[in-house]
Length: 407
Length: 146
Image (tube, rainbow over all chains, first blue to last red; front, side, top):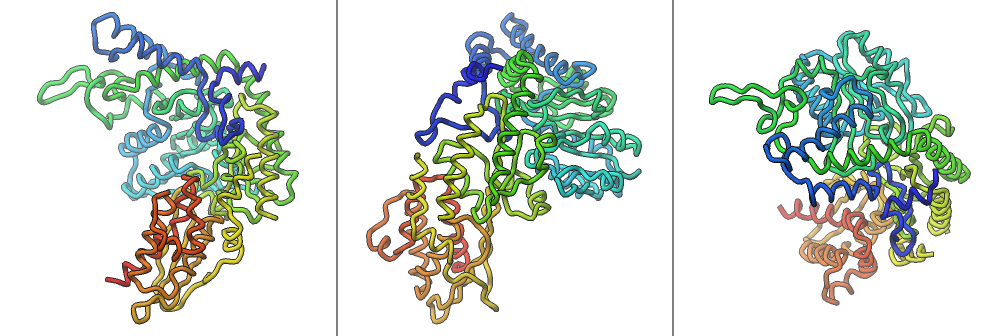
């Protein structure tokens, strides 16, 4: 991969922050957008803007065609068996809430169990916790090993014949670990449960095949995948989707309405009430095209090198604690750490002044912070468009911040 | 390297307060007000004891960044011995100062070391760190008033 050419595709990477070159290492929060995505959105508004699935005029047909073409593209991207299994939402959070409020609401009974893991983001925890409370169901948690990986014995213990839903992140947004989805799906299915996968941190970094994973639902966002904010995806197995009554009603999702009765549109329109985020979907399509042209082989090679430089660089500091696996082979592109005696916010402010953007806080995973026994951490996360120079600048700035506070 | 700008925010007096905070601890039999900063999870507890309408004892405890710890520490110095009314005015003045609003000189004088935290106005993402303890104190005083 020609890094300088790829970096040129992302105009923001050539800007400054606090008088220093922008070193963007908060990719797990949101990725930067290539010019191709920005152009696709403005092209749509300049030349193709019309509402979808309504107008008989040519412009509306063009907008609808573009929107529906992205559905095909997404289906191919995650290897969904058919396009009808894919529908558009606002975000990963919206997708996961949809499953809780639709599948969960319609299938859960008092005494049933929902199983999550200790590393979940709030978006794949709170919807289930609230559903469990509404349904008088029990929320159970699969624990982690000392290196932050899923404890398989705990998974086997927590998932039982009473379990109806297993909700799990494909990749952690804190620990940089990947969960064994295929294995968990088999276990869940053996007990008659479904598995809901939060793919937010996975889809930009590895090829995803929902059929191989045997995921019943798979959720992700556009904005962590080089696409715009405000658009998310939910994949569901068609046989499951066909059993569900929509949770939202209105335009777009009907085929016939009388005063007394409504016939719903076929799946997936049935689950896309109202005017969707058309420009967002078109932007997502451009992002997927960009990633497909680059190819995951090239992306993974570059990201593995960056992760190795980042992780090994951090581990050379004797007063830095890295959470999660300490070996690059087990570590994804997200690295959470703390510096002894320096609060994460102070570290992040110091790095900010050196032009380095990292996250400091609980990363929307407060229960995981309890497991790690820290209030908060710093987190650096890489994307293929980061350079070795980015990581070197980060490590040098961290050294300077340490010296300032430890003087 | 622009890291030198760290000195603008983390002035010596702030670093010293954070390293050895004043009035850190807890008072038995005095109600505690605890506030947290939802963006970072920091938690600060403030206790204020008022005797004859003056703040006779004040303590803070909890975990936080340099700014929130130092701010809590200087606050306890500033508010000790003040009347409830005067303390509330000082808290208001401090809240204005850290968002970059103009504050009359009499107030910056009385805020003393706390006025140094006015530089946090240049670091918008850190303003909440500076105000956390002061909000907790305002709440504690409000509850005493009632």
